[in-house]
Length: 112
Ligand code: FES
Image 1 (cartoon, rainbow, N blue to C red):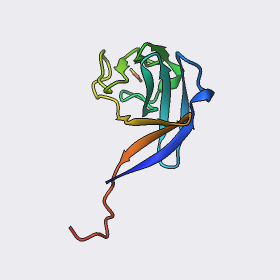
Image 2 (image 1 turned 90 degrees about the vertical axis):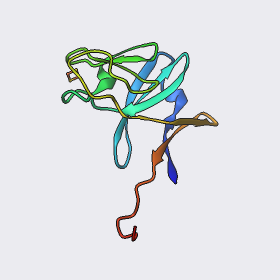
Image 3 (image 1 turned 90 degrees about the horizontal axis):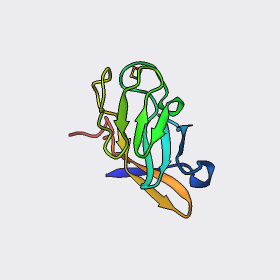
């Protein structure tokens, strides 16, 4: 089971640009590319750097601090010094609104 979360209006992000968005329980970066819209966790997996302050080339996002690049299509890290992949989210566009699908977190009170 999953849940959908509204992120922003696509019209707020020019093509080939990105921005950070604060959601109730996480901060994400939204990138508007030629091949679609991608949403990933805002922070680099190496240290404390907001990826929306970096550069976007196609679907590759480059960290502003030490230059690691991540592929937004699958979150894969491409360069040192970051070693961990980035968490990305499935994106749905509906009437110009960007939504992401979050994995279901089981209620801890549920007996399992
Ligand atoms: S903080 Fe992003 S590569 Fe170091």
